[in-house]
Image 1 (tube, one colour):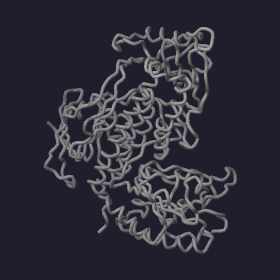
Image 2 (cartoon, rainbow, N blue to C red; image 1 turned 120 degrees about the vertical axis):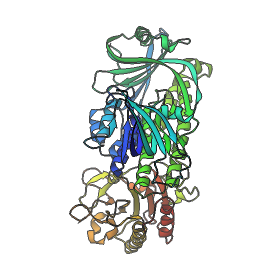
Image 3 (cartoon, rainbow, N blue to C red; image 1 turned 45 degrees about the vertical axis):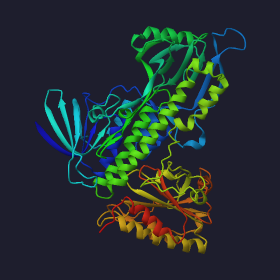
Length: 598
């Protein structure tokens, strides 16, 4: 039996595995993906792309293609029984609502097939992506005697067999179990899925409808006398997905396509509903389960459906799975390039994603009950209350409610953080606001200046530096932060490759000259060793896009200023006042998980 060594072995090429691989490719890590299918995913069952996932794709530089091809969900339509007169078996529209609150994200909620999302991520893995198809994982073993800090050993052994019967053993420093709800990695480790199934059965079908229903191209929730139905329009203008609540007592394995279509017709009364074609359909019993453990010796990590399963109606499965991979990928990149310390980084994955999975399952239980006709009847939930709760759930379903607790890479100070930055929460994703780039007057979202290339960001809000006092303060801050950055930046690499820097000034930018900006914020980088002028922004009026009022949006007093430390995955790690303790507190934070250069 042949053997192969690899730093990271990813078992499964779904959303989680591919997102982790994007990070590993950017860090130049030696990794391989094993996939039991015979090629890339052709038809994905997941399609809802929440705003947080759109932000992630945009940070990787692949958001534009997604947004161009996707269906944009802009409005919700609510339909219910016509109980105020007429035939109660008929439905009528009760209200419209925006799909998301404006302040949740600058990005939209979109619909795009998972197969296409995977294709976009694979495009980031180089000309010859290291994905080995038609390979089934048979089991995993971990040498528990190897210490968490040992980066020279390959303590994880994975046995696999290819379609032609060839057996091979892989030895890895780390293994990611991204192999779905029936995970061989999880079962091989002896981990269990804890939770339950309900007796609620739903059908799902992607169809080409022939109908006079007026909201067929809107996301719509229908509560009828015979059950509930959720409409999700698909990309491409023709296909629509239906999620259909089936009658109590239905067995998922006995459901036929005729059953789904017949039930849908009853729900849509008095409107006509026929089906020109059905692209795909299925039926499932709803269950919520979570793995009892997410890792083995901090060498094998479970992600996605391998460690959490739930109903598909909130559109969370693919999104949360992808964000598991997004979380672990950059941490492994830091460790395997020698930049980061294994213990705090790896422990933070477990702390952060176990909590996220637990919260997801609790949310999904409540959200699923909301769609259950019997539950609403028993608990007196009116059609108006259903619609209101559905809208209120928007922040969570957008992926913007995730809040990480204190860890090696999140420094929360509950008492003081909000005094520094009122509208930014440590442990949550860094929000954005429009700013004007100083060097060329381009109006843009601030997060566009924080591309996801693996570095940390020191975002300094310095106030109005045309004022002598604020200019002097900025010079002191720059010197302090330069000392910190130099401590963790190896010789011979770009000065912004480990800890990058972004400056946001307030006031009239035309009163400030380029030479007044400290050199720290215009480092010499790139092939031609030019001064990088693209790290300085102003909270000022733009020529064509108005004023972003960024300081107000973030809740920062320009007179006081602030430092916001943003992780490679765009979560806020720490906020600090621009005081005399800045260098010491910032250095202490980074020393917790980065390795200082000799």
